[in-house]
Length: 294
Figure (cartoon, rainbow, N blue to C red):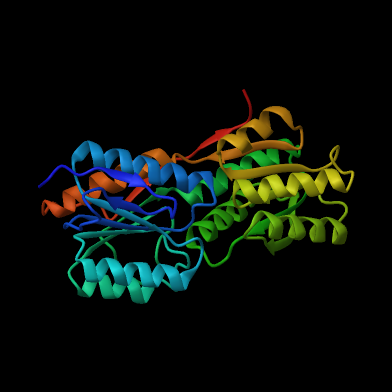
């Protein structure tokens, strides 16, 4: 196999440097390039692919399911050995994954699992456990009693698991009540969701954002409403901006911290094992941490 180098182009696609030629290897369809979490996954994949001398191409769906389906179709035509995918929609990506499997391509899901289909391996944060950790932190911050709201993203299974874990975790704290839950996928949508929930429930004491963007937006809404002495916000991802906010903004009391660099490296290493004919674990969970400040 020729030694190939990969580089991130302006289009956010990693292409093989040798004149754009394709060789059997790994094709990856990532959910977005708008979030630092996925930028870290892509960088880690690139670094590991270069270190292990394996061809890699990364396409970015930017939360557009139709683009992701088209990108996967392109990988099938090119004849990749392994497809790594972070589904834009856990159910909507099913046809593309089934078609890749029918073509003999091994499939790995990263960060976001797919629903109703078996893949070679799922690599991602133990989102349910992370949700439980967020609930425990929220209850601690509220002194075991209060009203909380949730900003969610219900079409992504990893977020569903976070919310399920959060709800389950709060069962141990019966005096902490969930009074509102709204979808807020982008930061702007999360800001509007937080504003709506605070207006309808001015006695809210805490907000759990499914991701850092949602939590950071919620913190803005809390301060705009003049409730910074009342409402505590917890996020999920643990990217630098959110960690800095926890360090400097009393409203942001903590974030459940994921490790995207581990995910990216593990995805490439798992793909190489599959290409070599090895069996791999069906699930490879990465235990999240909790960041509450320096």
